[in-house]
Image (cartoon, rainbow, N blue to C red):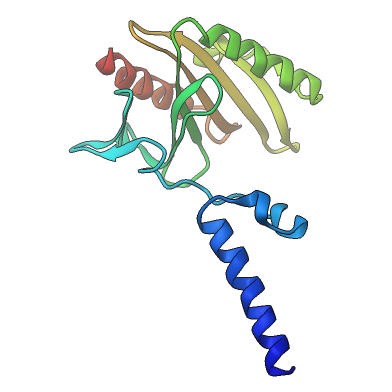
Length: 191
């Protein structure tokens, strides 16, 4: 490669890097505009550390631990969702997503969940225990285990919430209710 070609290539790379750094995607070549946008870190997304875990600027809190679950991620505001946090059990087999919504919207979000899973061809289940009070779908599995997802909409004083739990039966049959109850207690403490 000649010096001139190398310099031209370097200028092109520098221009693309600068455009990405400053959010000027319109100045990028079409091939660079298709790259995935950078993911916000939690501080850019409105989260700050507090003594117990993380707190969103709206006041929604996600402690480091809830029951036997450990917070693995916080998520930013998207559409009607104000904020969310993801918890996992020690094995990673149970995942719990706790989301805060604008007041009066949790039932609508539950309807979207149900409609979306039905449209995707998942089978709705009628289970016993705590899952009976939520909306549950089977999302896969085999003869030995069934993958399930249950969503519960809830209303609080200042916000609405959903609790979504991904688990497998029969392995997590005894763990779903304690996980759900721990999250509900955490939400009650915020209201």
